[in-house]
Image 1 (cartoon, one colour):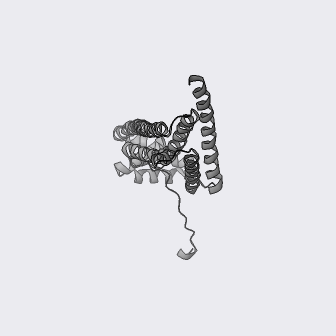
Image 2: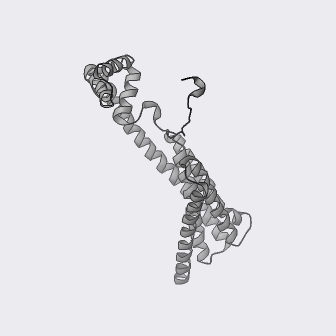
Image 3: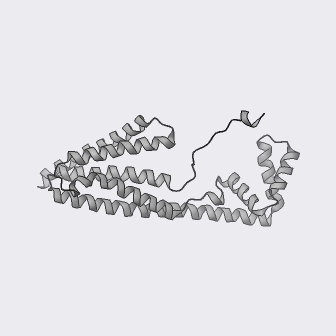
Length: 234
């Protein structure tokens, strides 16, 4: 087969440590702060109170998301590193057993036993390469695939703050009506959903509309609760 006849294709990067927290951070910032502001609006609060509540929600949510994401990713990373270290020790203490284990992996995949053993033997000559292969086969992750807790936390913090800013922005600019904030937030949710479709293979309109409806539902619910509580406690 000639080089011109070869089929080439590219895959999306699915191992990065920033995409998931960034996506969830932006969505969470939009939905949670839109819901918060809707509830405060429903209670008939002043525009000043709504703005203060919105900025407080932004700050608290961003720090909470960043702290939670850092702890989660750091814990997962530490667990993976500990298990990789176990594998490193086993490769040093029981190389023959580990070689047989890797051989069996290739045999189960259809490679002839003699060829599988030779492939495993050659791959095991480099200790770091052997560790990489055994880690991927047994743990499903390699030493170089682990996400950074700091990157995840910063992505989560920044995206949440940007998302949460949209529904409060009209009030910060002097507005007093709720509808500009709602429209801006819902438009942001639709755009976020459409952007996410680029990495999920979903159609942009489906993904965008789904996020818009989820945000609208949350806003309607909190507005109703705010109205009830505003009347009951007022």
